Amino acid sequence: MKIEKNTVSSFHYRLSKIDANGDAIELETTFGGEPSLCLQGHGNVMAGVEAAMEGKTEGDVFSVTLEPKQAYGERREGSTQRVPMKHLLGKKKPKVGDIVHINTEGGSKQATVLKVGLKNVDVDANHPLAGLSVQFDIEILSIRDATTDEVQHGHAHGVGGHQH
Image 1 (tube, rainbow, N blue to C red):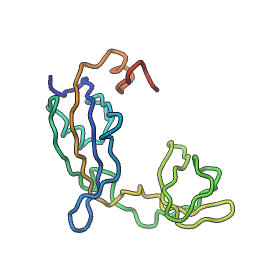
Image 2: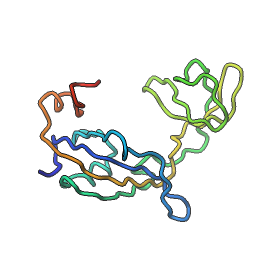
Image 3: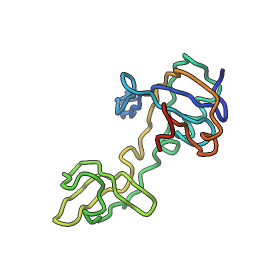
Image 4: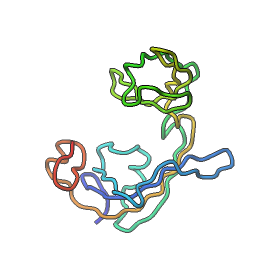
C-alpha cells in the first residue's frame, strides 16, 4: 500500500535544524518512543513533509529539507511583544531564552523570552525556528486506509479510540 489521500501512516521522524555550516542539529525525535500518525491530504503535517510522504510505502526511509518559507516562516523583524504573565501556559516563572507557550485568540503560540518583569514578559513572537532551514528524517512504519470517522474529523485516531 502507498501513502495517498485518506490513508493513515505511522512513522518515526527526527527534526533537525540546519546550521550555517550545513550540518543538521537534532531538535526532537520520535525514534525510541511512540510513532506519529498522519492522515494524508488533511494538513496534519507541514505541506512539504506531506508532499514528500505521498507515494511512499511501508519501510521507506527518507529525508526532506525545508527552507524557512516552507517550514516555520521567515523571521519578522520588530516582532517583540509585552505579554502579561497570566497569558503564559504552564511555566509561570520563565527565564530569558526560554521558549514559552502563549495563550492567544488564535490558540497557543510559541515565543522566546527576551526580558522578564514582575507581571509581564517581553517575547520575540517569531517561532523559535523561524528563518531556519529544517530537515525531517522519516521512517514509514505502516500504512492503512483511514476510517470514516478519521476522514470526517480530519485527523488520524490513535490506538484505542479518538484521543482528541
